[in-house]
Amino acid sequence: MATSLERPAVEGERTGTQVSAKRQLVTNGVTRSAWNRFTSKSTWHRPFQLALVFTDLAAVLLATAIAVNFTSVPDAGFHLPTPPRHAEPNIDPWYYVTAWVMLPAMWMLVLWGAAAYDRRYLGLGTDEFKRVVRAFLIMVALVSFMALTLKADLSRVAVATVLASALVLLVSFRAIARAILHHLRAQGKGTQQVLLVGTYPEALEVYRVMRRSKAAGLVPVGIYVTEGVSAVRGLETPVPTFAGRDVVELAAELKADTLAVCGTSSAKPGDLRRLAWQLEGTGRDLVVAPQLTDIAGPRVHIRPVEGLPLLHVEEPTISGVSLLAKNVLDFLSSLFLLIVLSPLFAVIALAIKLDSPGPVFFRQRRVGRDGEMFRCWKFRTMYIDAEERKAALMMENETDGLLFKIKQDPRVTRVGAFLRRTSLDELPQLINVLRGEMSLVGPRPLPAEDGDFLGDVRRRLLVRPGITGLWQVSGRSDLSWDDAVRLDLYYVDNWSLTTDLQILFRTIGVVLRSKGAY
Image (tube, rainbow, N blue to C red):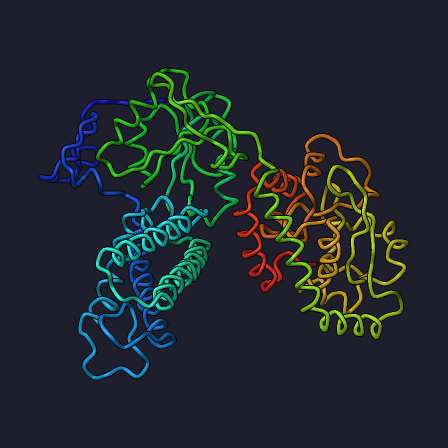
């Protein structure tokens, strides 16, 4: 890795233009100003943070309004946070100060203190929402402490309403803000420009991961090759490649606000440390992308040993209280949905019968957890001779691996096309969930006729298959078989109840957009 601790050239020296009186910050490991220390070259987060401040304030004020208008308290003494519905003209003015000023101000301070505005947690993952929940718990503790200390005559219903409403509104508003941010990032806005540093194969792997997840907002603008430069010459690379340059100067030239060190970027000890020194005061972020791209953060822990940071990778946890909660959630949710959706089932069954001859349901042998076979329920979407016609259509298969998909499949009925596009054909699998053969979230069950699953694919059988999963919310039939397997294995290795809830939430948007459904 090329690094240089020499003083950078004065702005304008290399271009021949008039030298500016303002010199560049010397990047020799000693920042010259506390202001420069915290000035980031990445600016996408500033308007987003400001928008979050306003939406959070709106959420807590709306929560106060809900408590004021939909709860009532005795009309004697000082009340928090709501007056009686038929308030007297001489309401204690402290009520207004507390409900509309002090409580929202406390919320904003606690959210800031819980790092809910930290740009590292915004836009992706669950850490942002975890910090909002943490702020909620702190607020509960603070309000309880103040009530006991001041011996205030509080309405418990009103306090519970204002706090619970604030939590729901904060999370909802932030989810909407995140969806807007993801939409902007899909258009190339609100992103970080990343210079990848490492060997070409390692940098290319990180490049592919970043391009797959556009919601992360990381856009590679170049690759700095540290080893094997000769092997890269003549290759058609997705972004420009460089070697033998000063990394910091190259980042400035490419207007990269983030440097990502990929894998084992250098064999020389101390290079990463010296690069971090060089970046001090420049406002550019330094991130390290080790060769753990398919292992989620909760399983990776840094454990320093005598100054040596060791990345400890925990084993996957597919048991315990979380798994019990998942099983209970599956059973209760499937039972409730089957009861509620029974009229819709009847309408769909009638439409299928009127559209084409044959049974309403299609049951196929699928492979479940630990290789156990079961019959997967679906609404029939094809003509009854679909299996016999499959062999004649094999040459038109538009997917690879164990998948067989055709966008304009002639075997699909008119009603079946609608059911597939809206994913309504999957609803009968709630029966499998109720029977314990499937889960709401998990890898999709594959047909048993495709034979034994060997190698990495077999690892999918460690968990129960699901109606929806990471594969479905990431592209469904538009993905290649390799990508589908990679996503399923990622889910198996990094499963958590939080991940399940996140996938269920994302499924709603995917179904409404009919993305990859055919």
